[in-house]
Length: 263
Image (cartoon, rainbow, N blue to C red; front, side, top):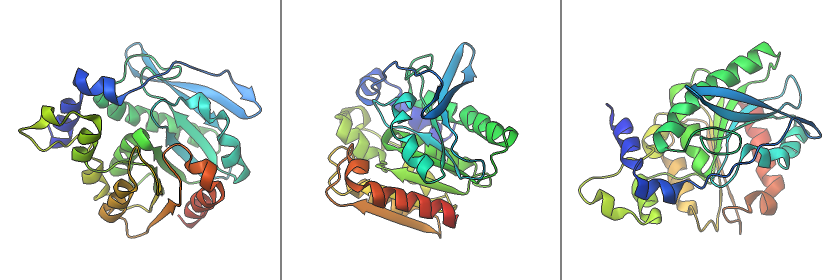
């Protein structure tokens, strides 16, 4: 067992899980406005993950997106049109217990499930004539599975985008108020800081300067630790954790569009 595996298992304690995950059940039907449909990816016997797909154009960049906590894939019916206007295809993955997905969320499951979700994403774009480059993106909690996939599949992705992501496990443990569980060890947790140092593909870090849930210092740490030669960042003034697109929509989407074009 690796240190990263042990880090995940150390997070799978009831005292952490109920503070970390806020699952919500909600699944939307297939739709034409916005153009959206669901795919269900089996990740374990009797357990499938709901992924909501928003294809915009066949030659547009393809973004596999892991959403934030308390969100579900169907919420992105309101966001995907903004991506579509820029010619970006968006594929949003839920987690166990979220949206239309089965099971219950754990840290280990969220990270392990990202791999079959990635394989299904690549299979779908390959079989359906989507010729644009693949990217992986994660917001907040979703930064963990996004960095996990970028770490393992650098030959397949053209770039990594992290929005409002976290870096060091020790800081996350402090925010959760569970420092007492790690008195005798240095927590590894999801290992975002360890993994991103080995991610060499182009990387874009986006964060709100006034984020009070995951401070902007975490985004700056991810940027500094990133092993990518081609890395860039956008810190949006006066933006917090959940209003970052509202307060900085143009700058946010300009950065994402420019990044996917460069890569």
